[in-house]
Each structure stands twice: as structure tokens, then as C-alpha cells.
Length: 117
Image (cartoon, one colour):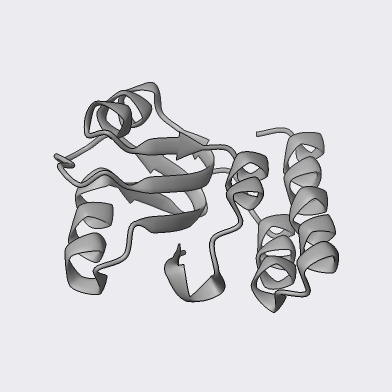
């Protein structure tokens, strides 16, 4: 992914941190700046496992989500990147594959978000 796109995502998170006062968004802005292509790759099966274990529905992936595995929970997933099959499976399970910008607009409370790195 191009550095400009990563920087744009980081800026969106930083602005949201200032607007809401929630430290989680500032922390994610800093972590997003450090993203390198495929430095974190997460399969849907891992998200499904984490959802069952935590009971939470909102996930922020500091990397790329791949479509390997099955997902049955309606999860809201934000990531720096998604594979096409991951998006299709998330949507088919009645979930949302969200851009970083869209995720912050939904503004889940920090206690509702699982950060996957």
C-alpha cells in the first residue's frame, strides 16, 4: 500500500482522537504510521475465534485481512487492507468491512474494540 494512503488513514485517526478525546484513536494513529506492507496478516478464522472468545463485534486490524477460514458472526472489521474474498465473506455473514475512516465515524467506545496486530 502506498505511503500516502497509510498517512491518510493515520491522519483520520489522529483527527478523531482530538475530536473525541479517546486515547485509543491516537494510539491507533501511531501504530498505523508504522504499518509496512503485510506486516500483520489476519485470516477470518482468527477474527471469528477472537469474537467468540471476547464476545465483541468490533475489530481493528493493523494490517491486512485475508479470506481464509469461515466467519459466521456479524462482525464490524476495520483494516488497513482487505482481500476481495475477506470482504465478500464478512458482508455475507451480515458484517461490515470498513475503511479506517468509516470505522472512526461509527465511533465505537474503546471498550468495544478489539485491536488485532
